[in-house]
Length: 352
Image (cartoon, rainbow, N blue to C red; front, side):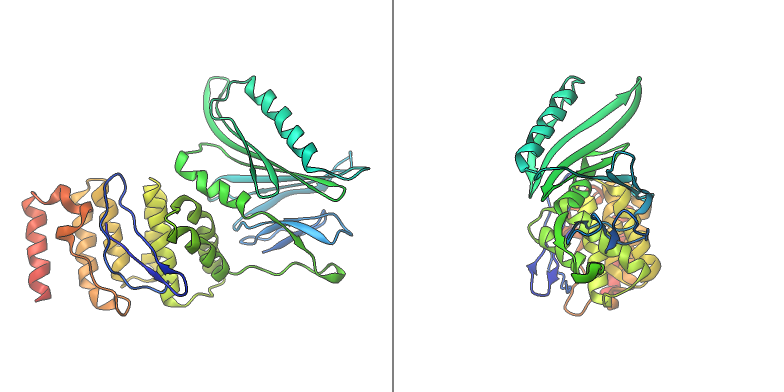
């Protein structure tokens, strides 16, 4: 597959081909918060933030599509929030605990080290400790429980602010390595924000902001970290469209590419299917779908989608050109297949 995308004010992007080398083509494209105090409401497709009443700040976690399952003050005085995302299977919980003295980063590091020692006794081979922004972080995967495959990825993060400790837990069962970027995007986007005077809700982040965040990673070829903000942008677009057609097309293209290059062909296909359902005559969606099927060695679906791509080639974004399948690495496996070569001859003849 070959894909190079322009982003306004951002420069050139790149494309992926799973498990094989890629070539670039010149394709021109242009291319919330829920204030979760202990008594906050739940809302789909919003970011999450957590704070104590009376505090002038909150911890914001840039997520979307989450449902708040638990939001309570526990008997020991800690605030507890639990939110789940049914679509991607990610769970995020936050504990906020006030202490009598100032909270310190050193205590967070000590707490993380103690938790790591306890986890090490369970012999988790991928255990690691590091810092992400102001957070002291512990990561590991629980492969099985009582002999049953579990594969739960866990990210624990501790933050000290004034007289409050915040403990974040981001987890996913049936975790796959390509999803690491999705989980880390939630943590890397978490930050302490100032609340407006009078306790008003923090400003809402819209899909364009998430689109820009994802594009910054994408343009650095950091595809796994582009997934989280791009997915947030698409989730928001599904319920409250803000992007114009060209930006929306680039968002769908780039998110599908980001999933694909990290080996997640299932989600890549899901994004492209959604894109086609909303924009059924945009050829690049079909071309990328053809490339994806080619990677799966599915000749029939490869050819069907390639036909569609060329059928609608007049709908390319202005300045964009249809790539040449003969030189695209994704299709090289079929270059000795008469059926596929006949299709290419036909498509070239129709183009004349």
